[in-house]
Image (cartoon, rainbow, N blue to C red; front, side):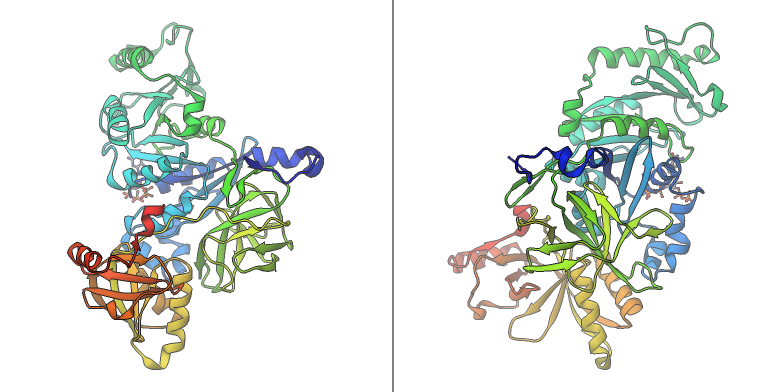
Length: 539
Ligand code: G4P
């Protein structure tokens, strides 16, 4: 059931036709890929088309240039990985596009998974020489679980890679998703001549003058008359493959695309900006506008009158000049207006949203209005938590909980300098609230433990503590543990032992950290009354 806030009146009367058009024009997506597949390069090209940046190299500059002035981006620079998720917005052809960037490195998958909760579709980039890589597979599974429509961009066709049919087979075999090639490469690497565009019934030539770029096809799907391209054996080979696809391939189905059962596939080369515009235009046609979202009171209509949204990310110190902290909100219904008052059901409190920002690639602007699909940033002084719902009106509902992760690696953390305890605690509190790392406290002893999904999270933590909070930390490795939460509010604290360490998470819930699988099983046999669970099983 779609929760409708209107009583008797039609939507147009309440919010105006423009509002509906605005919501329907939103396309909000994330790019998922394995590091180095070309996410940054493709993002940059999309932003150039959208006029959001003027020069190539701007997004790259984030890795090495001005963004790196933000201290902890240094890590990103040193390791050449994208640690943070940022938001970029541009207008194209009547659409407003919001791209949510995600860190490709697996140690930051928590951040990525939360970001995927805030999008309506995903673009999957595959390096055509490498095929489906590990991190792509993991992220793909998350999208699949949520039924997010996925669009595939097979990148780096200017280099020799796997045969296109082999890549399609990988999509179906490794990912288990049906695919429909919207276009098909004519050669690759040094012999890359262009793409046969099945969808627009034309050939798009690689590296030719702009006026020769497109060649229309006749009703047989062939280039009419004489054309130098026809002299190449690759053209004939392409026609054969197209025939094969027409006869034996999947049929295009917009419904299947919308439900995430079929992925439209585009071939191109982000670096040489080839096939990117064609991809963008087709993507915008088929990608979904914001849909209804589940909440504690049923589905919430994106065209609903009351404003609502949820916090999917908190990031401190994005701009070292301001030392600010921003809560990222995905708007899910109604219209955000600067200065409006919202409820935060978790706090049972009302807040006036006066300090807000939108995200354009080169600058942050104050945002006065935003609708479903948009991402707004709210300056935060420690009020918000990841997963918080913000609403107006009488219904104090909560959006679905965001996926939770069970850390696998643990360290004991202390301040190096006892005189700096205050900044130590402040830093930990803020970074934990941001979701950068998870915090646990030993029972009966004043000891802090940190839990992470990947080792790099500890390194970023240490780096940020030093650079942003002026707090040097000592971290003592505890190795990997199996964490299980206690179902219930009490537990006998004497059950804690080195092999089954009892701690509390930051919400004071009891958690056992087991040394290994054996310790977990042994504990369960001995203490059948203690009910344990893994929060990841509920994702
Ligand atoms: P990522 O964000 O997914 O990690 O990948 P990124 O865009 O940074 O691209 C990774 C590398 O792949 C870069 O090269 C980039 O230039 C290259 N690349 C991206 N798209 C294409 C393409 O279509 N064709 C070819 N041939 N290369 C492509 P690099 O040498 O690591 O970095 P740089 O020195 O070029 O910046």
